[in-house]
Amino acid sequence: MRRYVSMYIDYLQYERNYSVHTRNAYTNDLLQFASFIGGKEISEGESFDLERIDSDIVRRWMMELINRSLSPASVNRKLSALQSFFKYLIRRKIVTAHPFAFLSGPKKAKSLPYFVKEKEMETILDDENCDTGFGSVRDRLMVEMLYETGIRCSELVGIKNADVDLDAMLLKVTGKRNKQRLIPFADRLKEMIVYYNNVREREVATNSPSFFIRKDGRPVTSAIVYYTVRKKLSDIPTLSKRSPHVLRHTFATSMLNDGAKLSAVKNLLGHSSLASTSVYTHVTFEELKKVYNAHPRAKNKEDFL
Picture 1 (spheres, rainbow, N blue to C red):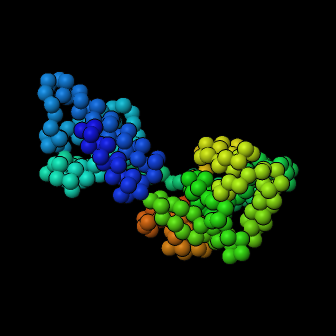
Picture 2: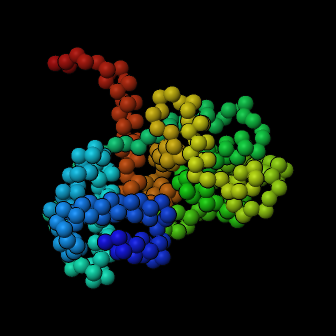
Picture 3: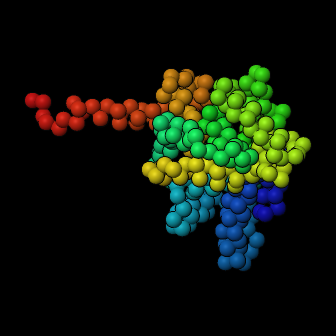
């Protein structure tokens, strides 16, 4: 099976343009299943044919994952990777059927995405006591750009100098499966970009094509972005999750709260379907309920009869 897993991962890389992160996740999930099958091979003392993998075997693997206290989301992701793998095997005529008939993963509770309230973001971003050195200017711009454009961490890291059009005030980003999109930005972000470029030119001697760089000229990494965002958001004690994706959620929630159309937010986020974006409508609805519950009439518990 491991040979077919390698073939499948190559297919994801060269034909489907899946990211390194996604390919690594699929590899780990499929090799975990291969190890599970390997246990059966040892106990049965014979080679295990892929055609013999049926829904009962997959169900036993699913139960093993659940018994290891994996979350429903993690179990479903692993099942999705295995299902996609078998679809690939069928197309390549390696197997004749997939083992997922009448099989469904564990249900997971729908959780609303974490986001930061606008006033809290303004307090963080409008701090007048910020250092004017290169590192501080860069970090402040990274947080501001994540919040004002809603781009992913990987998209931020991948920005090149040529992707920033100050005249048109447009940012070109490369998203999942190498899909590119243009995102407009406002005067405030333009001013911060110009300021960053001036500080970078003055303090960092480099011809790097990457837009966000370190003091030695190398591009920033996702780890640097995560650390920077966590440090900034640590000023909000009530926020239990602090990551670049929280700023993406905050961007989408703020846009919808301010009247943006769902389809427009979908395009800005680079979602392939409205279903992925619609979760933010639930966030805004929850906010509306909180506002209403603060009304004195809503607080009145007395029977009106």
